[in-house]
Image (cartoon, rainbow, N blue to C red; front, top):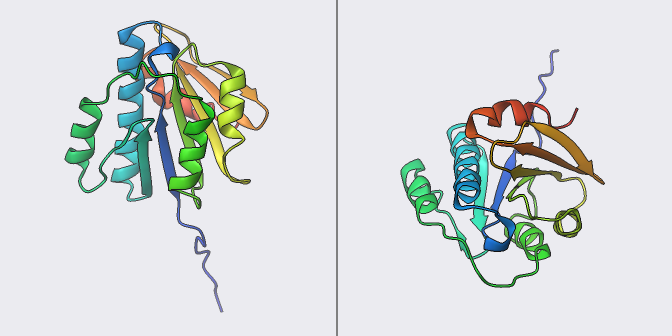
Length: 166
C-alpha cells in the first residue's frame, strides 16, 4: 500500500496592515505598505489559501480579487492613538487558527510594539513583520520568534520574503 501525504491543516494567512500615521515617515512609505499588503493578499488569494486581510479600522473583502484590491485603494492613515498590541489581538480574534500572520508596518513601529503584537498571537503561528522604509535595502532580523524583514520597494518583496525563516 502507498500512503500519500495530505496536509492536515489548511494554510490560513492573516495580512495585518498597520495604518497608524505615527508609524510612517512619509506618504510614500505608507503607500508602499499598502502595496505590500495588497500584493501578499493578492498572491494568497490566487493560491486559494484561506485569507484574512485587515487594518486597524477595517477588513478587506475577500469575495473577489477585484473587491479586495478596491478595498486596499481606500485604506487611509489613522491619526488616532491606538495601542499597537491591538493589531496582534485583532489577528488572533479574527483568525484563531491562522498558520501565518504577516504584519505590514512602517519604520517608526518600535521593536517593543512589534513584540507586544506578536505576543497576542496563538502559539505556533508563524509571525512575520515586514517593515516598509523608503529606499531601504532588504534586511532580515528577529525580535524573539518574530521574523522582521525590511524592504524599500515593492520590487524587492519576493527577495525579502525568501529571507524569512533563514
